[in-house]
Length: 212
Image 1 (cartoon, rainbow, N blue to C red):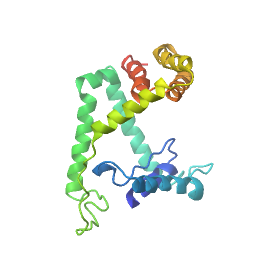
Image 2: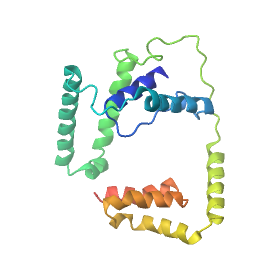
Image 3: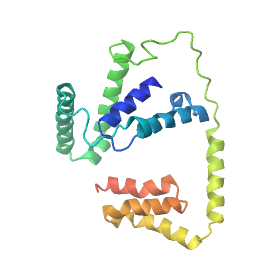
């Protein structure tokens, strides 16, 4: 909890546009109501009590922060140029370049954590050796999927305005030709009408594949 709170604060002070604080037991399996409430409280405290969004960026002008930001920007720009030199993002995904870069970073991080070169509080530093292991994840994800599918089917069968629902889903088919400013509105309308996340993201994935 301390780690994700610190990470969330760093993101807020850095001017993040969107923030998701994960429950602390999420890596071990299905989170329960308590851990989800703790995660929500972290964000609520930031929004209502800590005021992490002042008019100006608090870290602006700090040499250490500005130096790190400059280094990050230069490395990111160099990576963008490398990707463009290989015919863009879609081409590098097909050749496996992006995947290999991600795998290399992950391997380096795991090695640094194993050697305590990088600190992960509560895991490789300041761990509690008497802490019991989390219970095994016995969640029946197949049953959850079937239950959600049945709920969705009931929602669509009892829709008060079937014509509006169908029209919203049809808008997903024209998202590829819609101007950018209309895409979010189409997706929101379809979601409110009962469209699934998969139905909404399929046109977006096709658009990305076509380079738009």
